[in-house]
Length: 100
Picture 1 (tube, rainbow, N blue to C red):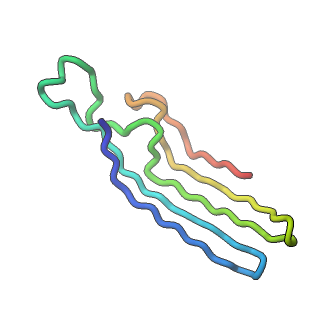
Picture 2 (picture 1 turned 180 degrees about the horizontal axis):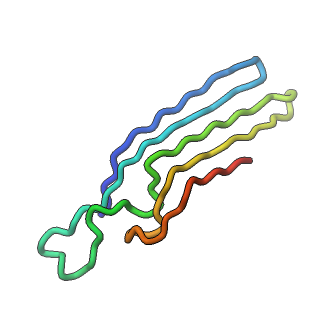
């Protein structure tokens, strides 16, 4: 079981008649709760740790331009905060940036 609480906000804007911009931000607060007493013998948990691949902060911004009636061109950037690659907090991934 994993508990994640958070919020996400997104914005869309038409800057020029042919240019649109989309942006978003997400905040996640994830924790692994402890097992109930009757299940503790069965499995090992890592209570209080952050679940794998759950960054606290992430954001993105994308745009696209209408070239003509047939074609559009677009691109963007996605950024993600630190996240763990496993539930034991042994392998940490740094800030990730991707663009297209």
